[in-house]
Image 1 (cartoon, one colour):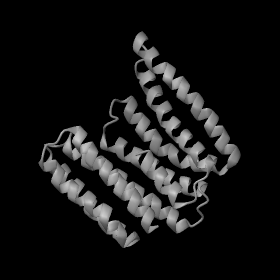
Image 2 (cartoon, one colour; image 1 turned 30 degrees about the vertical axis):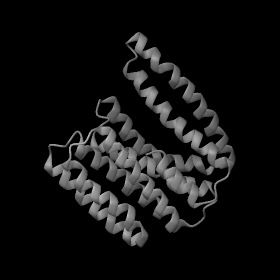
Image 3 (cartoon, helix red, strand yellow; image 1 turned 45 degrees about the horizontal axis):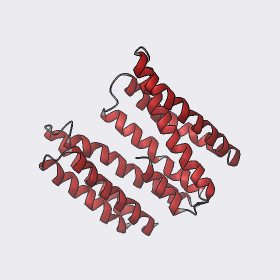
Image 4 (cartoon, helix red, strand yellow; image 1 turned 90 degrees about the horizontal axis):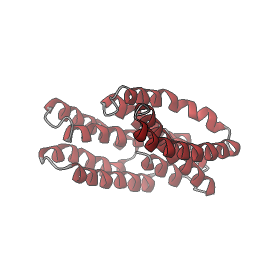
Length: 227
C-alpha cells in the first residue's frame, strides 16, 4: 500500500535524488504513526509502552527531518499534505477505537496511500495533470480492491455478500481501467479473476499475500508501460 503509489508516481516521471528523500519521509510517516498509536494504546502498560515509545520517537525524528527537507525543496507539499488529513483521521480514529481492520479504515488508508501517486509524480518532474489523475485512480482501484478482496478471504470469508461486493468492485475497476488505458486490462483482469478464484480455496494469509504481491507488481509494471 505504501510502495505501489510511490512507484507509480516516481517512475512515470523522472526520478531524482529528492525522490529518495520523499520515499524516506513516506515510510517514516507510516512507521511513526504505527508505533505512536500502539504506544498511546498501551501507555498504561509500562514495559509494552516502552517497547513502542522508542521506535515512535526514532521514526518520528527521521520523519521530521526528512519532511523539513522536502518542504524546503518544494513548499507545495504543505498544501498537498492537507489532502491526506481527512483520510488519515478516519484511519487513526478507527485504530483508537480498536477497529483498525474495518472496511472504512482500510478504504481510508488506501485512499490516503493513493494520494502519494500524483505527489510522487510531481516530485519526479511530472507535469501532465491527466497522467497524475490516472495514476491516482489506478492506485486507488488496486489498493481499495485489495482491501475488499483480503477481507473476503479472511475476516469475511463466510459472508457471501461480502464476496459478491468484492467481485462487483473488481468488475467495475476493470471497466474504469479499460477506459483509462486498454493495456490495463491485463493487471485488472488478473485482479478480477483472483477475486473470484482465491476465496473458493480457503488459503492461508501468506499464500493470499503472495497473490497480492503478484497483482501489485502487474499493476505497477503495466501502468508504467502504458503511461
